[in-house]
Image (tube, rainbow over all chains, first blue to last red; front, top):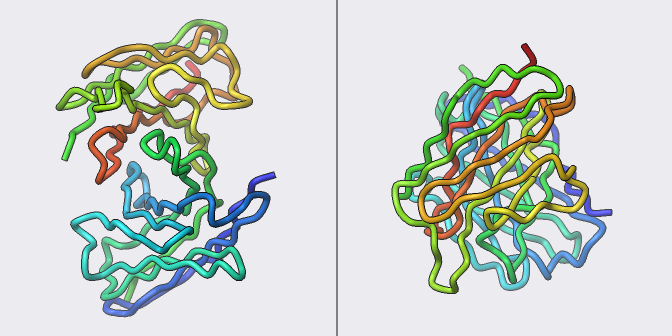
Length: 121
Length: 113
């Protein structure tokens, strides 16, 4: 069965960086992409960006350009999301989610369990 | 970016009764390939989101048939024919037609009266 297992919760100081991992299993990793979505406490869902696990192509949300980097390691079927220059309003649960290539615009079909990132001095 | 709105934002329902959530987009969601990429997600309390419906009316595998989606252009609806206790949570519509970015509605919280 398809599983996306994310790394554990993180506490960071303002200005620091965080790198969240997402290990995929149960499918051919390079045949799908990974989207990252975050959810601030008590708030809705915000799309952060996408990476193709096939060729590493990325597309990031405009508001995060310059602060976010998404990568993959095909040898371990793991996707990573690094966010730099953290601010308090980056405090959120970060989700990775699988997207298909052939029906990309239908959005993610499987989601990870989420990783809470807390930014606090 | 395309703005998604939902109504109501809070929906108390009686078990066994129907429920309906409206979603509207600031632009038509008809894509150049003829498809309409309006999708619905459910987020139960303390859980990750789960896709329920894609391309307006297609149920994902394992989604009960009491869930149905309809609509066209800019106006869409998610209906639950008979609400069960496990349906409590927040429901989000999301457009993919005008990616990037994917944009979500603000969410509709469904709970039991």
